[in-house]
Amino acid sequence: MKVIRFKSAETYEPEKNWKRTSLCNQKDISIEHFIKPPKHASPRHDHPNAQVLVVLEGKLSITTDDDEQVLGEGDAVYIPGGQSHIVTNPLDVPSVGLDIFVPGRSFDFWLKRKSAGTSKG
Figure 1 (tube, rainbow, N blue to C red):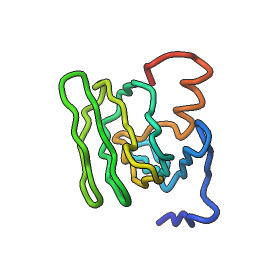
Figure 2: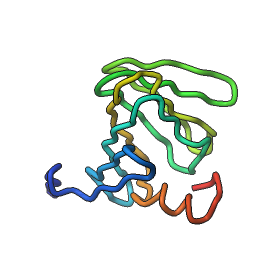
Figure 3: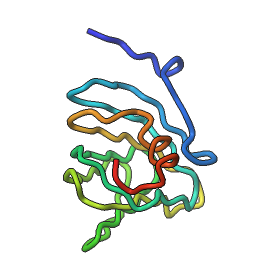
Figure 4: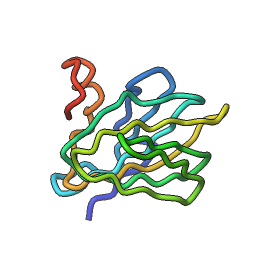
């Protein structure tokens, strides 16, 4: 068993006030807690990992090439690996969620993506 204490977990901000915390970073699964600032949208991106996003507080809009869904607290969405998507906080207050990736993805995904200037992850 491996315990990760939230207060001492690895964190970073891919963009101002967009906070990500690594709760599990294993080869077969990774889990990231995030706080998305008001009106913030992630850049359109994709990654080979399947993703389950769970909304813990607030609302998040998930946009793919052919669909857009708004999720509320307790809602979840499955995004298959390779599917291009944007995650937006439509509210005027921060929203909070969990990202679960299978297999696990590198916690520094957004930092690597920024430095590479690409939409692939």
